[in-house]
Length: 190
Image (cartoon, rainbow, N blue to C red; front, side):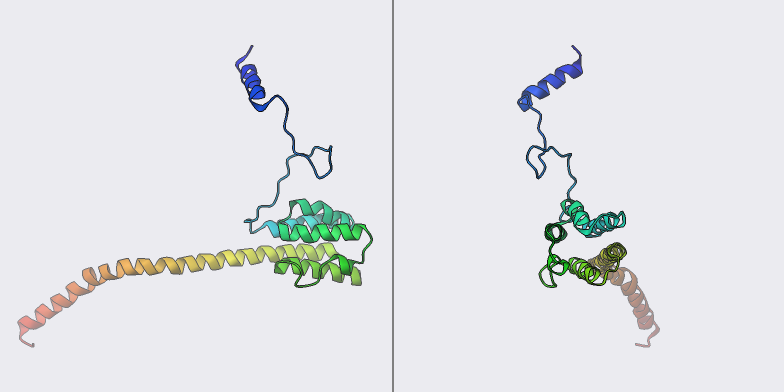
């Protein structure tokens, strides 16, 4: 028996002898490991909006695209997409399926709902608008990262100034002033 077979047998004995699987939402169906959006990922909203736009661009109905996107989206987006997918699949009015402003969380989620309601009432294409919303979400994340970096540079400059300013005064200005004062004192102009 090879070394790998011995290690496999030990692993099976330690695990209890039965394979472990992740169950899907439906009983009896085993799904592959799903990569869920992390709550602290700033690009998660933009990524889920890109997936939603790609599903719509491929020809999926809005309810199917929302259902396909919801498991991988952040919680606020997933809640809205899941609710809309369920209501649209039941035949509800799109104005009812997409929550009105103030009900959802976040500016981009409210913008998505507004775009979906407008698209349902006017017949405009939703995929392009959602793709532009994803681009705007990425720009907002980049702007907030840039602002945080600028705040950090300002906060770092304070302690550096506190450290280097006394050294500059002691090593740069004080010797010059003392030297000039000595020259003035010796010349008798004082």
